[in-house]
Every structure is written in structure tokens, then in C-alpha cells.
Image 1: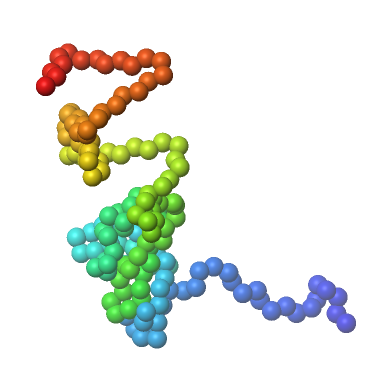
Image 2 (image 1 turned 90 degrees about the horizontal axis):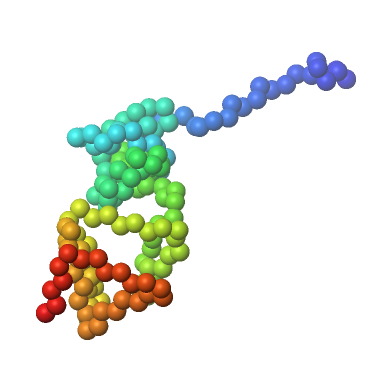
Amino acid sequence: MKPARQRSRRPAAKRGAPPVPDTQASSELDGAIRLATVLAEESSGWRVRLGTKEQVLSLDASVDPGLVREALESGARVLVELSAPPMVVGVVQTSRALRVNRQGRVEAQVEKFDLYSREGATMKTSGAFMQVKGSEVELYGTRILTRAREVAKILARMINLN
């Protein structure tokens, strides 16, 4: 028997990402899904890195372009269907999102909640609403309550009570 150092060994298989096939010539991969990284939004589509190649791909009509813009900002991966022609068909979600459950409720426990709107925001129920437009806030309801344990301050230059 040969000493351990002299035994012949098979070369180790290289690890890493499998090579990206030529999507135009490979009909056997039609419908296969691969991960890609979004690099930029262009007038003709989305520039993505698929393996070691960069391509400009169109976006499937079912995918919200805003979702792909978020993937571009965050570095999240997109799903590319290898068909003729290949196209972006989704985004891999990498963080939690607010969801509407089957009863129509959104429930979340967060440290801080910020909502920014350029034009305005409205919250409505069947009998009341709160609307914010520019620098105005409008509250409407049968009763509007303000409660404070210690101190309630109202700072105003002019108050009109109708």
C-alpha cells in the first residue's frame, strides 16, 4: 500500500455558482427560474447581473415596477425566467412586510411607524375621518376626544369655534 502522500487523488470539484447558460440558444431551460441582481433601470428595461453576464431584461406585466426599484435600492435579488426572451418575473422578499390577513386586518408590532405622503393622507371609518393635506389637519366625527394624564397643551394663534 502507498503512503497517504503518494496516493492518487481525484481533483476536487470546484464549488460556486453554476455557469449561466446561453438563454437564447437553450430551449431545454425554458421556464427555468434563476436569481439575478438589479443594477439599474433603463429606458428599455432593467439591467441585471445574471451569473457573470449583464443583460437588459423586460419586466413581466404582473410585477410592480416599484417593487423592482426597492430591490435595486436594497440589493434584494430578482427572479428571472429563462424563456425566449428572458424576463424579470418577481422579487425575492428579504425582509418582513405589512400584510393584510384574511379578516382584512393589518396587525404589526414595530418600534417606530413613519408614513410620508407628498400630497395628503386620509384615514376613514364608517362615521369619522382624519385628513392631512399640506399643513392642514381635519378631524371629523360625532365626538373628538383628547385625553392626557398630566398636561394637555393647545398652542394656537387663533381659534375659531363654530
